Image (cartoon, rainbow, N blue to C red):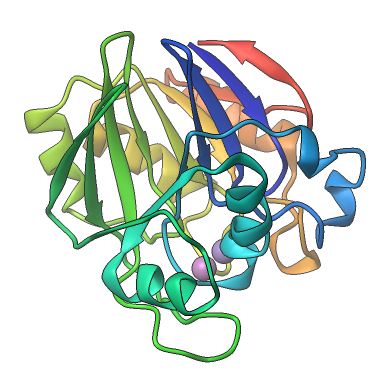
Length: 226
Ligand code: NI
Ligand code: MN
């Protein structure tokens, strides 16, 4: 499974010829200025919640790629009102079968409003169950005991967790989250984009290592095989 980082919490996954994109926030992100969104492939765009730093490029990439946008009901209605054509609504706890496997929209402890202030439903994350691998994309969230359900019912190969603190979990809580979800391979996201969430990456890597976990930090634009 190929994973590409586009900065902040935006990742592209390629599995079985399908491209899945999470939380596109690229054109407003100065750290991602080398990324040309017209080159990004997507069959599906999965949106965790409505905040600007997760939805900024959803409409343009959806239109470039003719992809299906999947998120909660309120976010999907909002994108419908903005002229996005292919949409699929979910709510927390729901599962949906797609070409590449099954997704489940799971709880996140955070907030969700659209860039214009419209109510953005309940924030979430996704458990993605592909033939190749199973993974969890946490979105923006605090540490929560709900994560223990993932350990009980999913054998995750890796997980995307926020580590930037202030608006989400920081490194210490992400280490506890890794234990809650029963996964040792963690990809860090939602750090360094803004001054509020700048972190000491060396310290983060050391803390994960000491806890017996692997923290993977991508360079923006980098692709890894996971
Ligand atoms: Ni947020
Ligand atoms: Mn955010």
